[in-house]
Image 1 (cartoon, rainbow, N blue to C red):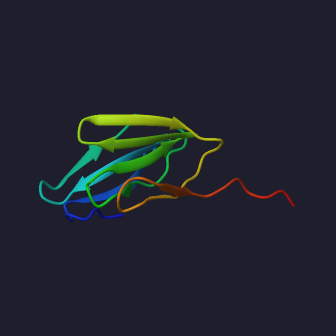
Image 2: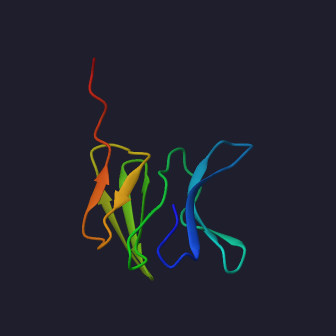
Length: 100
């Protein structure tokens, strides 16, 4: 996902040898990768708000970053895809799969 100022592309970086994952940003201006967290078994895709706030999940923890401030929220389960609202006040994520 690309943020509004069009400088960063958010993505999930997967280590080829270990298959571990980490949320990351590709900086178009500096042609570099910024890793947002250490390698883990499950992380989500990265989402942006209009003001540059970033959101991603590590296992069932939601991380919200704005500048140097980071907040964590424990959610009931992991979601690979989430969307941060344009004003960064709400998050939408997939609910647990229904049992069949």
